[in-house]
Amino acid sequence: MEVMCEAKGLSQRRACRLAGLSLSTCRYSAQRPAADAQLSLRITELALERRRFGYRRIWQLLRREGLCVNHKRVYRIYQLNGLSVKRRRRRKGLATERLPLLRPIGPI
Image (tube, rainbow, N blue to C red; front, side, top):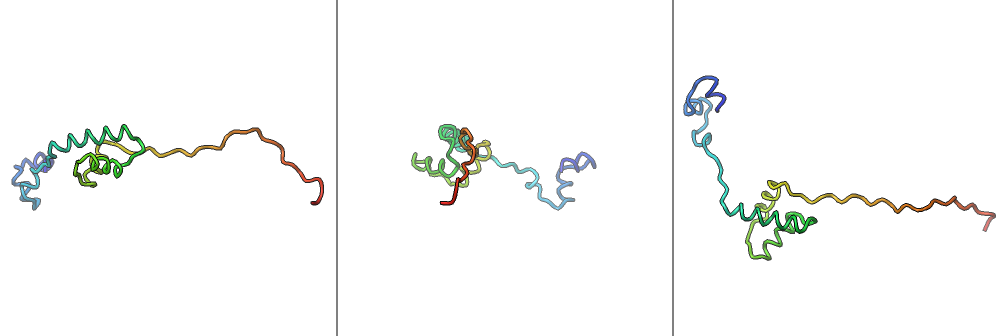
Protein backbone atom coordinates (compact mmCIF):
# COMPACT_ATOMS: atom_id res chain seq x y z
CA MET A 1 0.00 0.00 0.00
CA GLU A 2 2.77 2.42 0.91
CA VAL A 3 4.41 1.93 -2.48
CA MET A 4 1.11 2.55 -4.22
CA CYS A 5 0.49 5.69 -2.16
CA GLU A 6 3.95 7.10 -2.85
CA ALA A 7 4.11 6.18 -6.54
CA LYS A 8 0.64 7.40 -7.52
CA GLY A 9 0.22 10.09 -4.87
CA LEU A 10 -2.94 8.47 -3.51
CA SER A 11 -4.26 8.56 0.01
CA GLN A 12 -4.17 5.35 2.00
CA ARG A 13 -7.96 5.12 1.95
CA ARG A 14 -8.18 5.47 -1.83
CA ALA A 15 -5.32 3.00 -2.42
CA CYS A 16 -7.08 0.41 -0.23
CA ARG A 17 -10.35 0.94 -2.06
CA LEU A 18 -8.63 0.44 -5.45
CA ALA A 19 -6.92 -2.73 -4.21
CA GLY A 20 -10.17 -4.04 -2.75
CA LEU A 21 -8.92 -4.14 0.84
CA SER A 22 -10.47 -2.74 3.96
CA LEU A 23 -8.61 0.10 5.62
CA SER A 24 -8.36 -1.78 8.93
CA THR A 25 -6.47 -4.59 7.17
CA CYS A 26 -3.85 -2.09 6.11
CA ARG A 27 -3.51 -0.36 9.49
CA TYR A 28 -3.74 -3.37 11.80
CA SER A 29 -0.65 -4.31 13.80
CA ALA A 30 -0.70 -7.26 16.21
CA GLN A 31 0.41 -6.55 19.76
CA ARG A 32 1.60 -9.35 21.98
CA PRO A 33 0.67 -9.11 25.66
CA ALA A 34 3.30 -8.33 28.29
CA ALA A 35 2.90 -11.87 29.65
CA ASP A 36 4.77 -13.10 26.57
CA ALA A 37 7.82 -11.07 27.63
CA GLN A 38 7.94 -12.74 31.06
CA LEU A 39 7.30 -16.15 29.55
CA SER A 40 10.01 -15.53 26.96
CA LEU A 41 12.55 -14.79 29.69
CA ARG A 42 11.63 -17.94 31.60
CA ILE A 43 11.81 -20.12 28.48
CA THR A 44 15.23 -18.68 27.64
CA GLU A 45 16.47 -19.33 31.19
CA LEU A 46 15.29 -22.93 31.10
CA ALA A 47 16.76 -23.50 27.63
CA LEU A 48 20.15 -22.18 28.75
CA GLU A 49 20.11 -24.29 31.93
CA ARG A 50 19.12 -27.44 30.08
CA ARG A 51 20.63 -27.31 26.61
CA ARG A 52 19.41 -30.78 25.62
CA PHE A 53 15.75 -29.92 26.26
CA GLY A 54 13.53 -29.00 23.36
CA TYR A 55 10.36 -26.94 23.51
CA ARG A 56 8.20 -29.89 24.60
CA ARG A 57 10.26 -30.68 27.68
CA ILE A 58 10.51 -26.99 28.52
CA TRP A 59 6.72 -26.83 28.21
CA GLN A 60 6.48 -29.70 30.71
CA LEU A 61 8.81 -27.89 33.13
CA LEU A 62 6.64 -24.77 32.89
CA ARG A 63 3.55 -26.87 33.63
CA ARG A 64 5.27 -28.33 36.71
CA GLU A 65 6.08 -24.79 37.87
CA GLY A 66 2.37 -24.01 37.73
CA LEU A 67 2.27 -21.98 34.51
CA CYS A 68 -0.67 -23.11 32.39
CA VAL A 69 0.72 -22.39 28.92
CA ASN A 70 -0.22 -23.73 25.51
CA HIS A 71 2.52 -25.83 23.87
CA LYS A 72 2.07 -23.96 20.57
CA ARG A 73 2.76 -20.67 22.35
CA VAL A 74 5.93 -22.11 23.90
CA TYR A 75 7.01 -23.33 20.45
CA ARG A 76 6.41 -19.90 18.88
CA ILE A 77 8.43 -18.11 21.57
CA TYR A 78 11.13 -20.79 21.42
CA GLN A 79 11.53 -20.17 17.67
CA LEU A 80 11.39 -16.37 17.96
CA ASN A 81 14.23 -16.42 20.50
CA GLY A 82 16.34 -18.49 18.13
CA LEU A 83 16.59 -21.41 20.54
CA SER A 84 17.18 -24.93 19.34
CA VAL A 85 18.74 -28.14 20.54
CA LYS A 86 22.18 -28.61 19.06
CA ARG A 87 22.56 -31.77 17.01
CA ARG A 88 24.83 -34.35 18.54
CA ARG A 89 27.91 -35.14 16.53
CA ARG A 90 28.75 -38.71 15.75
CA ARG A 91 31.57 -40.05 17.89
CA LYS A 92 34.45 -41.39 15.91
CA GLY A 93 35.96 -44.73 16.86
CA LEU A 94 38.88 -44.80 19.24
CA ALA A 95 42.26 -44.54 17.56
CA THR A 96 44.16 -47.76 18.23
CA GLU A 97 47.36 -49.17 16.90
CA ARG A 98 46.71 -51.15 13.74
CA LEU A 99 48.00 -54.70 13.63
CA PRO A 100 48.56 -56.79 10.51
CA LEU A 101 45.85 -59.32 9.71
CA LEU A 102 46.72 -62.82 10.99
CA ARG A 103 46.79 -65.43 8.26
CA PRO A 104 45.90 -69.03 9.00
CA ILE A 105 48.78 -71.51 8.90
CA GLY A 106 46.70 -74.47 7.78
CA PRO A 107 43.20 -75.90 7.75
CA ILE A 108 41.50 -76.31 11.07
